[in-house]
Image (cartoon, rainbow, N blue to C red; front, side, top):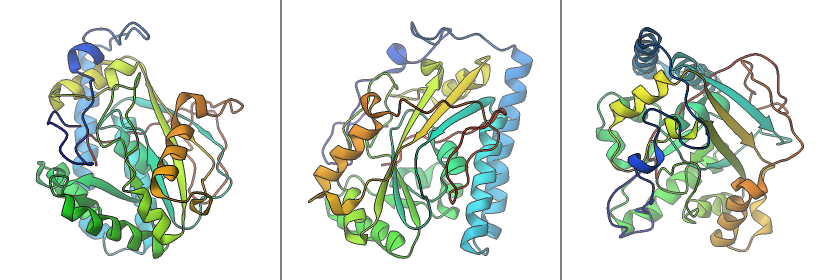
Length: 309
């Protein structure tokens, strides 16, 4: 998310502002927020920050593990973070096969999106270069193998795309938020096409994912909203649910260029493109990336980050 003037494809702007989109004491007109007690909110905040710091401590050792073990550890960390912050996760899955290289693309609402993606579909995240300088989270992102993009330098973009393509060509998974900025969730941005070139170059599929939160306003992290205020809205919401919808993979072979591929992914992630037949239940058993997705009936948790490019 940025409040800067858009001067490159990686510097889009969203009209969403904290005053208009975020819940201050309510979750907005669509979903009023029931407030948790102060003691519970403080307990969640403490547990959530503790889970994030645990990730920082484990990240150096994780880098020495085999790829499968690193993904399992990332998935466990994502679940722990979201659960600690008091977020329950529901998912709908329609993807038939999640093995092999995938460019995972999702809409972007909150810092919660990153742990949520890690809990369900762990992979190499793509983030703006500024994230590397963030206290604690920047170190965690770097140790976790995040691919950083300098959005102020157009000349750096081809190199970033090559890095993504290299991960995909090696059989890895890359997770991108191609709107380039956080949006409130009631409205979203256009999918920027640059990242989709990596899927074309590597000849791999694109996996569209839609993220929604209820109450929407409590989760939204937009504009110049302070992180502390956003954290407090999340932990003080009595019941927050994150819905994640995993769509069918899109073959990059079917589309002639990155703009067409980006448009197809955006359509899949839009409300009109969301699956209608699947009925998701609260689930603690979030899907493994190598199995068919199926909803189960236990409470779960997931979460994520702010403005990856």
